[in-house]
Amino acid sequence: MSRRPEWWMNVLRIFWPLTELSARMTQWPVVGWILSHASLPVFTGRNFNISYIPINKTIQGIKNILIPDMVLEELIRRSSHRVIIKRCTCRDHHKCKNHPIEDACILLGDGAAEIDPRVARHVSVDEAIAHMKRRVNEGLIPFAGRVRMDDFFWGVRNRGRLLTVCFCCRCCCTVMRSTQYFPKEANDSLVRIQGLSINVDSKKCTGCGTCVEDCFAMAISLIEGKAVHSEEKCKGCGRCVSLCPQHAVSAMVADVDDAVREMISRIESIIDFE
Image (cartoon, rainbow, N blue to C red):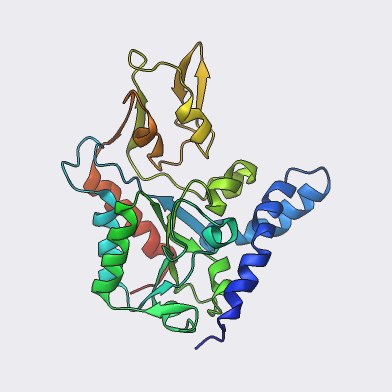
């Protein structure tokens, strides 16, 4: 069992700004080059690989089934152990006004069994699934995958046996706030789910810029008064679909079953969580 007393959460909250600052520093001359190359091993390859899971009910081809339910419920049911972190460090640091700080991450696998109960609740399968459904229903966007730094944050041995499931808000999520500063190799470790495409109906688009301002991946821009989506930059969170006041943005997954299989297979290849 790791040793992380309750005050450890306050330590993380105080030092959390360094996570965003270090991402910004990668853009600085000289220092940025050194920092990028020093940190890349932690944020690439088997140490960092995540996918956002779009929460929209309007994604074509999935009827009334939410993709997070399909993916996350299977991961939770197959996991050997589950904990819910007691406070979301991102929301705690930013004093989030939109979501409670208790709406925190689920960690899965043998690594989760090592986490100190003073900073996380050890829960059953049903409790974890209920927590996941509440967070998704609140509009938080989940991601799932390998985050090597979580081993350090929660005192887990680095054995590749800890699967992270975060529930992100655009206002506070460190990854969302920092992605635009990531070196390309780290940015590529945010993998869009297979077969997801985002489309903008130029006839409906009024060029209000809502989607442009909110896109953390900077994948949407205004060209001649219309929103234009970049498939190359998009990380597939699906938030733009929910935000568009004109309902001009839509999402489609070519084959949901294939997308779910690919994501779970990719997770299995780098994390032993069962």
